[in-house]
Structures are given as structure tokens and as C-alpha cells.
Image 1 (cartoon, helix red, strand yellow):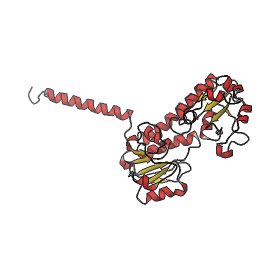
Image 2 (cartoon, helix red, strand yellow):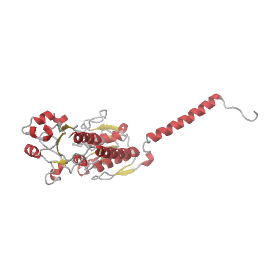
Image 3 (cartoon, one colour):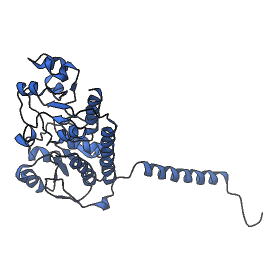
Image 4 (tube, one colour):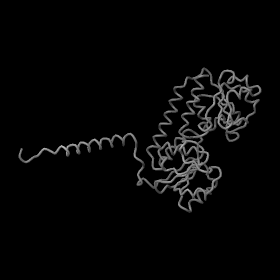
Amino acid sequence: MSGSRRPAPLALLAALLGVLALAGCATRDEQAPAPQADSAFPVQVQAEGAPAITVERRPQRIVSLSPAATETLYAVGAGEQVVAVDSASTFPADAPKSELSGLTLDPEAIAAKSPDLVVVSADLDGKLAAALGTTGIATLVLPDAPTLEAAYAQFALVGTATGHRAEGEDLARRTREDIDKIVADTPKPPAPLRYYHELDPSYYSVTSATFIGEVYGRFGLVNIADGGDPNAAGGYPQLSAETIVQANPSLIFLADGVCCGQTAETVAARPGWAAIDAVRDGGVVTVNDDIASRWSPRVTDFARAVSDAVAGA
């Protein structure tokens, strides 16, 4: 035909591959949101109970001195930006553990890691932020989350601060929905169950005024450590063996299995404890020490453990 030619086969193939490539990219973009663009910075972030800070640009070298924050950083997709974590950060296993401590903050040792963002759970009088600020290093304080909602807010905040806003917001949403579903799907006992949560063999426990206590409360459990004031001792009272035996809880949760080797057998061997309903009826549950003490995305694992215990009681 005059005035037109059939495209060469190679040209057709190239055009087809180009269309397929574009389609593939579109699909990937829908499934995994792209990291927050550098143009989204600077951003101001502030956790409940902590000072506001401005993150000037997308951090490339992050030091985490909080085990809960370490887990959250990896969960929002910022793991590749993390260059060092504190010695207590045990999850994920491949996190770059260092000699740094979140309890004894050493500005010089932290600065030696050349971070542009440092995440801590506490900064007394802002001394660390002041010291690191002189070298242009931002310090983000993420205090112990007092409630589940505060934890969800921190997930979103970590995403925003690290250039993963969409992932952080999605993590917060999914965690909230997962816990709501776990609670809703758990069979409700005929009467509220009493429980004791053990932090160590010296009978330190938690009250319902704590983050951990709120998780139990979502299942309608009654905390024997509350006494007359759940806020006493900052929510972490030390009980006596006599008090626990007399309270006769239906469920005992041991968060000292890893640290202190406590099991259903060691509990049953304690003087007088064999008569407790939880011991007699198989209601002693060992929960991972870390999962039961961190306001991290793995709180869903803790909620499942509580759900299983309630369902089996």
C-alpha cells in the first residue's frame, strides 16, 4: 500500500515489551507504596509525651537505641537505613547490633556511628538531643507507649520520620484491625477471668493502667495486681506470694521464661501454688519476654497468646 509501511517485527516486539513493563510497574506501585520522596521533607514529628523535632531530610543512617523502635523501623521498611541498634534490640535477628545502650546514653559513641537520625525511648532533660544537635544529628524520642492507640500513632510517626509515611500508616491500620479481630473472635468466658502477669520471679507485675494491662483488658480479664489503685507503683507493683495465692487467678502469664527460666513446672513447685486454679487447671502460659514487654508491631503475637489462653480456660 502506498504511503504506509508495516512496522518491523522488532519494533512491534519492543513496543509490546514497553507496554508490559509499564503495566508491571503500575502493579508493583499499587502493591508496595514508593518510599516518601525527599521533597516531602522537612517534616515535623512528635510522639505523645516527647518533644517535637524537625527531620530536615530523609535519613540515610539511623541509630536505634530502643528495641521497640528497632522493630518498628524494620516493619515500616526503614531497615536498610538502620546502621546500628542497641545491645537489647533482639528483633529482627539481622539488625546491626552494637555495644550502644539505650539506658546509658553516650553521645560520643553514638556520634561515632555517623547517624543523621537517632531514636531513643527516653532523653533525660534533653541532654542527648542537645549534644547531638551541635553536630546536626536529630534525636527522636519515642517514650513507652501508655496505650495501644499511642503505639499505633508511633508506627505512623516512624514511617513519616524515615520517609515511609504510607507504610507507617498502613502498619498502624493493620495492627489495629488485627488486634480488634483477635479480640472479637475470642470466645467470651461465662464470667470474667482473673489473671496474674509475672515480670520476674520476685513477683513484679503490671496493672491494668499499663500498655500490657490494656491488652489483657481488651479480653475482659481482671488483673489481680490492680489492688485499690492501678496507678500505684507506676503500674508495676511487686506482689507477694501470699497475695497471689489468695487471689487465686485462673490464668498466670509468665513473661520471665527467657530471662529467668520460669515454666509451668517451676511455678507449680512454689510453696502453696499447686492449689491455684491456673496451676491446677493448666492455665499457666509462658509468653515471650520481649513480645510481652514491647509496644512494637509484634503486639499482635502477644494478643494471640492471650486469646489462646482465654479460649482454653
